[in-house]
Length: 110
Length: 114
Image (cartoon, rainbow over all chains, first blue to last red; front, side, top):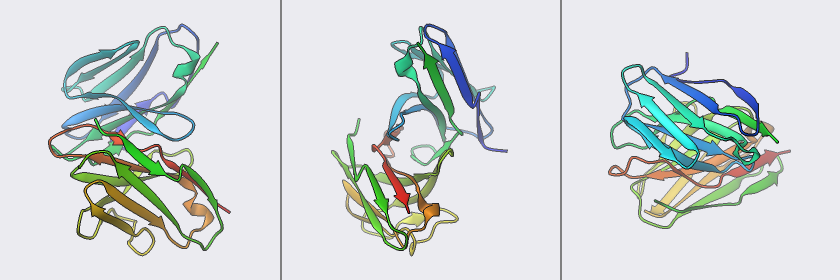
């Protein structure tokens, strides 16, 4: 079993729909990251969480430390949101060695 | 935040040859990492690049195949040696420091070995 599990692996939705991607982890962490990877391969950091909830534009990320679970929500989804979304955790405090989930491929159709 | 420049962005190489990927950061960072992402897979850490000393490799990765240099705090290279089609992947550079828990990545190098 992977230390970081994401669901779903693939998600197709219509423009405007509310999107939720889930991430569960089985190890102690110092932080959880949500990353976005576009087809070219480059990765952009969306959020870094250690507790609670963060919002940036149409994106919302939450984390429940007790349940070892995080969610990424996209409101009013748009075709430009189509990408692979990756959950990653930092296991060691202060270290940047990350353990990655498998990624969720999101496709938003117009 | 840190701005990372990685090059080349993509390359197509003949089997048996080697490719060196460069990673340049716009500020001094303590830690630099090299990751591999095979087609359809998640990212796997190859090694931690250490300034002034040998890189620390993860299980399954060896220096002869993936030599790494880090001559200073802002620059590192990863070489993929004696390439085979199985080395076709995206290779990514990442940076961080012990004081800043964040994830910064380069644009990635998409390597195809034919």
